[in-house]
Length: 356
Image (cartoon, rainbow, N blue to C red; front, side, top):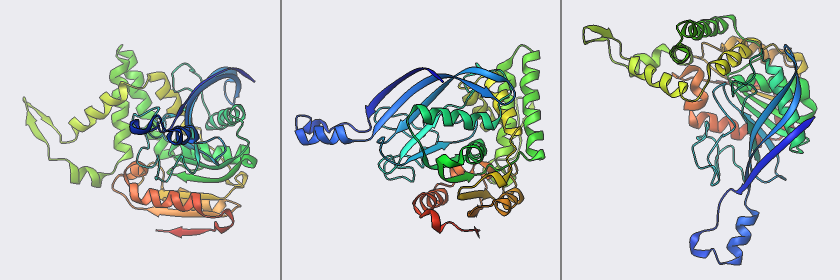
């Protein structure tokens, strides 16, 4: 049940200054897609923590009568997918969102939200299924009965599979990029050590340092040895100590992350990834699965296992990238082509196939 709701709506594009007095220009502005941000407060039944009061912060870009596409990324992504006139700062997936892009607000209503727990206020175990149920509650409040598509990357792909399993009647198709039906034990081990780094920082009364170190470990798991070999110089002696070529880069990544995340949010969302468990048999909507051959966190074997076990039409797209798990952010052209094909092809054309 929704307890509160607030939003702000803005035209996606304003009329040109040279013709602000023109009725035609003003009409165009009024008919332009809207960029809406808002939040709703409600009570949600969490799988491992019972009924809790939560706040869901969302963004919607595009006309309300366009087919809706829900988009979400990794645990560090937020509701701002791409820039608009109302919110001109670059979004987390700027390379794929915006007019003329694969995620075009002139063709689709692009909806996203901040992860449940992303503000650090919810210090309880969070299952990916909780995120899927929160999305369903948000769609109810926005009067969106059905999504044409759910596009998820990394953790977002895991949540997309949960949504398809739990709320498949509200979904036309799913695009799951670098996130599958289970958390691989190797990847879970990486994350467990990252969480221990945060805990160690807390013991030293320096949570910021612990969170930064955890982020640096995470970056190593996202990328590949090949990229580091091509990108960074050999170690050198600086002020009497050895400093390796990637340290400045890792320090930069840590500083950026610490400034926009909290230890509680990081810990709980990291744990949530490890709770991922979806029976592919419960997913009964067409799925495009995207895997990266070099991804060490989400192995290609799991992508094949997911597609083989799905009882519905599925397409497996395999790409190669030195960026490993981060390929969905870096391999712009390949991901663009996959998204356009997945979103524009008729549902009945989906079929089981593998593309390398």
